[in-house]
Image (cartoon, rainbow, N blue to C red; front, side, top):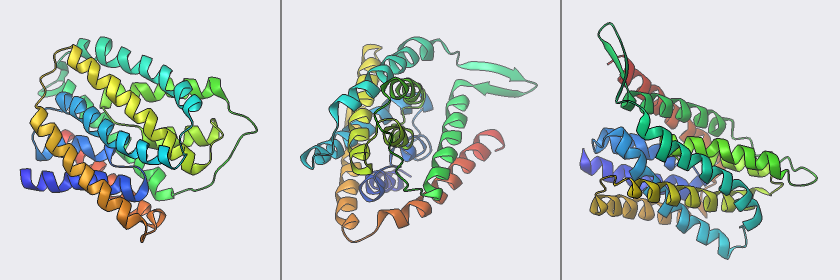
Length: 261
């Protein structure tokens, strides 16, 4: 299963390189089901993997002039605040066993996987619709942008997911950015959130297998490099709905496996 996991890790970067998103949504299932990582620890690992991959992508967009620093900071600062509240204050206080109904036990790990599956299905719907319409406001709505940043920080903190499928629409509709700049700025925000979230986990002495993390990250980098090369020949917009259906099936599988099997 580990060899399958390493191959699947390449797909994380491949999807990012081809369609500009979706890679982080695969990280948790790969870690949990193929590498048998505890779901709570997998959220920490995911922050690292997503963060370093986003850093590489963000730097690539920086060289292309697709980063809007002011907009990124307005989004990222409240996002970091909510992320730290979730990971460092609320998350450690959640009991390992939440409650028991008859012989069925609802655990913290089960809650993480079910919420993540719901997130996957929500993300898949936006991918399947593949709406490329860019609605630009007359000016940037910074208060709303900051509020949405706060909400995205909650998602990132609880699930260790980058939340790119939430960030990009927010930057389009409230940040008044064209699509290319929204993608580049989103990668910077994802890196900031992931880096600070992972640093917070280190502060809490979360056990980290760095050799394993670096190996998975290297696989994701290989995938991103391949994806960037393929993106010059393949239209990512045509692939996004197909990837969306794949993510939806995985989300439904997680719910069935965790609840019924």
